[in-house]
Length: 442
Image (cartoon, rainbow, N blue to C red; front, top):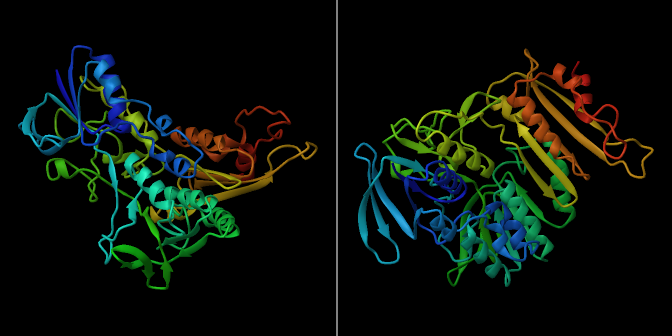
């Protein structure tokens, strides 16, 4: 069996490691256009902020390890085109310029995603950079050394984490986003308000509800970011607007969402026989809605890559879907979420109710008893749990992993009220915060 893998970040690495283990006689070839694999991009802000001193820890695999497994590891090789019906692909060695054709019995597309770059005036000026891979992180660190005013365009997780890292390094930071709240995709307003205050209290300017219209420069370098509402001095601009799937190679050859994300079934099979896909190049089954959505997350990628290997020869293990569970630390606050927010439920046209619990996470007779805010979103008619968010200065983020399981298993608020959680004064109250939410919903 001749297996070809295109791309080797999280999904690709998981696919290759598991395929080599499960099918020792398979001939596996991986084509990767970069010179490194398995970079944990979620650690960029930690690396930029100096929390992570040695970036080697942000890699969990290497081309050498793949080669030791017998994988034909082709680094710095770019796949130029594919003919899925003929089971062939055209490849170029980026170091030598040599172009050649290869063939496959099974093709695995793990080409990942790429940052969205808006087509606006001045976008090609120097010191406007992206934040995605290892090279980007090194570029950001180098250029930030001499930068005083740093603009972050985009207030999702990556953008706000970088803003905090820059501020802690003594920079003047402005975050610009066309939406009126930071982390809008993950949290409702009562949670983003707390996070926004933490940023402004630390001197970070939030230019929300503003869209960048152009970049201005001097001597070829960016000097100002202009929105329809204001102008902001800039020595360095980081674009963190979002991501799009890298699927140009298969455009028009298989079923995708309108934005290009490949649609796969529960066994990671595309609409083309013997062609599989995983990771940020794909749409995923979003359990709160039951629809295919584009949710680029490393956790999804690793799971999907593992499943490709298990299902490569015959359907064996099905994908259980995702709740898009995630977490972030903003200064003193620990924040996490899973599933739908109240606002995103409206976007999907789902009638929901919510319950919010704000209470000390453990008994008040303890030396400290920080307050936590928990919100659970559930379907109005069925009372099925669809999403949740939590914020506190003590780390209670694992609550969202618990509720992720609840969503995946279609539990209701009535179930949640009486789930068996332990009680110990160091950690919680006799009625756990999650139990309280269920009881309050009744």
